[in-house]
Length: 218
Image (cartoon, rainbow, N blue to C red; front, side, top):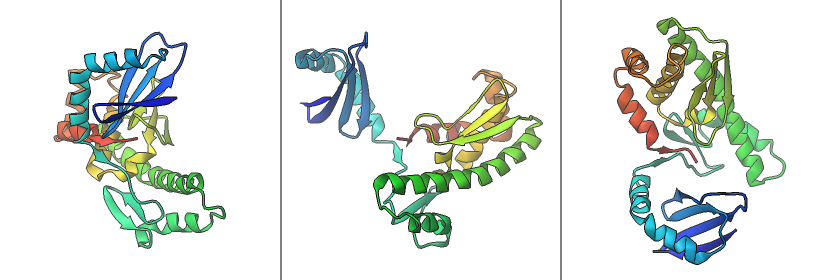
């Protein structure tokens, strides 16, 4: 792994000799990530120049994103609201943190992840049961896990999977994800019929969908 600068942006290079193509991604407000099999900096810089308009567009879009970050051990983000670690909302998390003997970043993050998973199991199961009855659609199982790029999924085996990071966003957006995944039980696609079904139960579904697109999961 190496780094270079391009127009004031930090460029992180990850080499993989097995890659047939070079991939460009935007990691943060001033960082570009490139996965490539080439070790030539000239090749990378020429590629960046060729893709400059796309890169600038992505950085503009990135500035509109809402971050789910918080100050670990001082705050907890729950349903789009930040609470002090001393608040009632953070009681379970605070208890978990107090039981950590070795104060490492990994163990602290594990406490947060466990806290969000516990809240997700309780809250998301209730909302899924509610909308399942409203929509007349049944599922076989719900799974909960932390994901980097998806809010939820629905398999052909009628298994719903929800991202535990949903506990950080507004409740309206959580309902949208629940209804969205339940709708896939009837339409395993994103057709007009699928969107019409979602909108039948959530008239503001397009607004909620757009809001989720501007939340940075990573």
